[in-house]
Length: 220
Image (cartoon, rainbow, N blue to C red; front, side):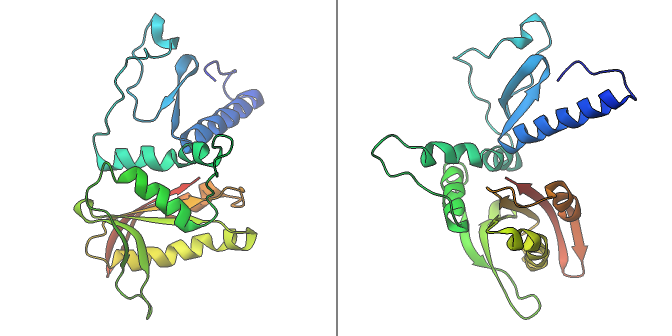
């Protein structure tokens, strides 16, 4: 991961592609890679340079507290799949939980956010767009932020996710309490073939005569 081949060679391009694949996989699971093979939860301060940089953090180290709601959400959202694991792989004789629809994912996300954020309003209606309105999954009015969750049901649905999110963005842009929109797409079967392209097409600040909203997209 740290020792790159000679630049501008085929070996270097292959190394860079494989390294980015590992980094992206870690980020999707709420982790981050540091030099010398250190893998730590996102939000953990970067290790100080020095001879001890490759050593694991002491067990008594105090976990870092998120400084902003965006930092908190990034840790929670990217760690959703890790949070699911102990619930889907429970001890013998105990009924495991499943995450087969959007409500399952929403309930877990809601439970993880409640200790941190006091005012979470689920299923509030958006203003009408193209003759219809929709229910936003979570509105955080104090932070002017909305979280929208999707679960990819099959290959046909995977091809329509982008169109669904575009419509959602138009709805949310008209809501007075929505300045940021976080779209969380749970794709357990890896049916979305180009998630980087989906993110690139939708992320950023979207502006129209109806308002402005900053969009972030996470494919888990």
